[in-house]
Length: 331
Ligand SMILES: NC(=O)c1ccc[n+]([C@@H]2O[C@H](COP(=O)([O-])OP(=O)(O)OC[C@H]3O[C@@H](n4cnc5c(N)ncnc54)[C@H](OP(=O)(O)O)[C@@H]3O)[C@@H](O)[C@H]2O)c1
Image (cartoon, rainbow, N blue to C red):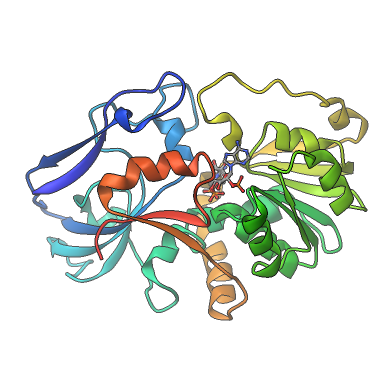
């Protein structure tokens, strides 16, 4: 039998474990051109909260009653296509389930010689690519500039800050709590990190950025973005990568201080990583080279068991993760 986690209903307000349902279903069988994959790692990402809702977005919602959407890394255990042999490790979009069938042409082989397979869901996968294109293409970060990154210890933020350091920028993180802030400075090598839970965010951020902010890599939104606006320089850039503070399903944040955009000629640009799909190989090569050279530090936050995937997602939305959130489906 195959175990799956379905989206059971759409939340009105905060999401809970009751919006998911775990079911057992017959093992799927691959048809011509298809393979059967045993999922080992499931990526848990903030966008999944958006997919639980049917509000208009950049991607269609997850269907109620269907397997919850998500990327996995797994092993091919049966193959009806010459392109993929049994035992190969692949990146899939099979979602929250132990096994799944996919067309071989839609799967990507994972190069396990560079890093552990799970890294292709994090630093060598979608979050790493987001960091790369967001920082260099949208943020246009230049050496010597000050780059601020929110959710700094997380999957995207940790890569943004390290890339910006390697690029010669002064880098300041924003993270929740002393432990995460210490990691951001001591392990990731940021110049400073501000604790957004300490209650003085705008003042602490201004103190940590004596030459102002040139690039705000925004992963959080809400009060965090509002605080950053007070310290941003003329002709600075805001990379609107994520607004996790607003994913809770409550009312939209009422921003104050947007006049800073006008007086400082700030460019604020939203980004969705898919827009660079054609250029993924270039960024993957760049990230893989840095990983191979030992120049990037990477941390994972692992929850065991498919049945705990809902809890992992709800925890991520509240900062319970410390590093890239994954579910280990099988050892
Ligand atoms: N645009 C794109 O193409 C794209 C692609 C990937 C990800 N993203 C976005 O990038 C952001 C980070 O994603 P990720 O996968 O790297 O997640 P992550 O940073 O690993 O985890 C989320 C972190 O957000 C912080 N957070 C949660 N709620 C918060 C709140 N109310 N106020 C302040 N901080 C809060 C928490 O860190 P602390 O404990 O430090 O507060 C939490 O650990 C998300 O907004 C996501 O939607 C966008």
